[in-house]
Length: 421
Length: 62
Image 1 (cartoon, chains in turn yellow, green):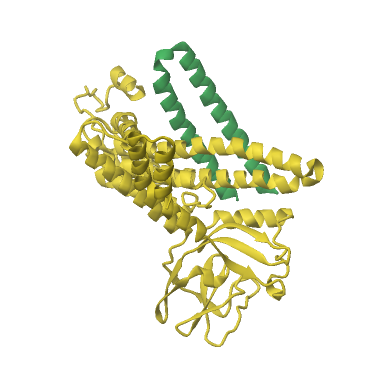
Image 2 (cartoon, chains in turn orange, blue; image 1 turned 180 degrees about the horizontal axis):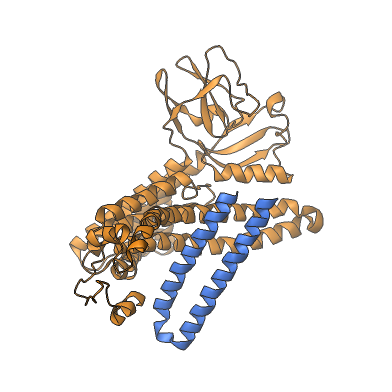
C-alpha cells in the first residue's frame, strides 16, 4: 500500500523518472522493516487486566504510585530481572488497571519434566497471587522467582522469615528480559559485523553502516589492545576484546531505552563477563607471570614469602573489581535516573504538576546524556582493564639485566621509564 | 544508620581521590599539552580503579 501510494504521488507531482525510481527503491528496501515495526507496535497488548474487586490487589489497584515506599519498590522491581517486558501501566476511569508490555516464554524444568507457557499467564502478578496450572503442577511467581506449589496447596504460605513453606523453587530456563536483551545484542552484533566483514571482500572501503563500525573496531585495536598487550600478542585477543566491548556497549545503550533492560546491571551477567577475563588471563600467563606471583624476583627472601598471599589475592581482586564496577555503575545510573523521574511525583505538592514535571524532565534529560557517556565509558574501561591484565600476563621481561653480587637485579633507569610510558 | 555514615565517608574518600587525579592530570596536560592523550588514558584507568574500590565498599556496606 505504502509503496503504491508513494509511487503514485511521485509520478503525479514530480513526473520525474529519477525520483520515482528513487522512491520505489527506498520504499521497497525499507517496506519489510516498516511493516515489521508496525506489526510490533500494534501487537503490544494489554496482557493483564486486574479486577478492582479482587481482594488481593485491592491495595494497589489505584494504579498510581504516590508514596516514597511505592517509588522505592518500583525502582527495585525495575533493577531486577523480570519474566516479561513492562512498558507502562494505566488505570481506566472504571478503575481497571492495564499493563502494557510483551509477554516472554517461561521454560521450567520441574519434577514432572519440561513445562512451558507464556509469562502473560501470571497476569503481571509478582506476589504469588495468581496460580498457573500446567502438567498437573501449580506454579506461582514471587518477586521474579517461580515456585512450584505442592499438590494439595491452593495458595502459597510463608514462615516468619517470609520464606514459602509449601512451595519449592524450580529450575528456571525462561527467556527473561535480560536473556532476551542478550540475545538481541548478540543478533545485532552478528548482523552488523558479518556485514562489515563481508564488505571487505568486495572493496577495502566499507559501505553504509559499516563505515560507523570500522573506526570503532580500529579504536579498540589501536588504542586499547595494541598499547596494553603489545605488538606481538595482541592479535590473539582481539576477538574477545571486540566482543566484550560491543556486547557491553550495546547492552548499556539498550538499558537507556524505554523497554527497561537492565542487563549489565545484573550481577550474574557481569560475573560471567569477568570470569571470561579471569580465565583468559590465567591461561595466557607465561612463566614470568607465575614467577612474579609465587617467587617475586628482586626482593629479599622473607618478602618473597610475604608477597605470595598478596599476589594470590591480587589474581582474584582484579576480575572482582571489573565485575563490581560495571554492575554498580549501571545499577547506580538506572536508580538515579528513576529516582530523578520520581521527583515528578514527590515535588508535586511544592511546585505544582507543571513545575515538578519540568524539573524532573530537565534533570532526567541531563542525567540521560551523562548515562550515554557512561555507557561508552564502562564498555571502554572493561575492555581496557581486560587488555591491561592480559598484557601483564603475556609481558616478556628481558633477563639480560646485570646482577650484582647478591643476585638482586640492578635497577635499570630505562626500565623504570618504560614502565611509566 | 551507620552504613549511611559509612557511605558518606566512602564518597568523601573517593571524591578526594578523583579530585587529586583530575587536578594532577590537568596540571600535567597544561605543562605538556602534546602528552594529553596519554595522560587522559592513564587518568581514566586510575579513575576506574578508584571507582571500583569505592563501589565495592559501598556494595559491601549495603
